Image (cartoon, rainbow, N blue to C red; front, side):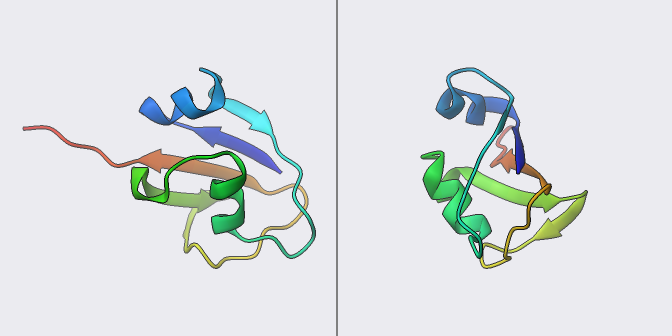
Length: 74
């Protein structure tokens, strides 16, 4: 699947904002987050094909996954 991250989450992907990730069949969003070593608490929203998903959503070949970080500000 193709993974795109935003904001400070790029730090976990060696400053790349996108990369291809291979996971076993039946892997979930949570498995993906673990595989790229992003702390789950740092992820605010996960989308696949532009639609918000939950950590237990199963991934499929060709999915376009986006991880959006927790935002803060004042």
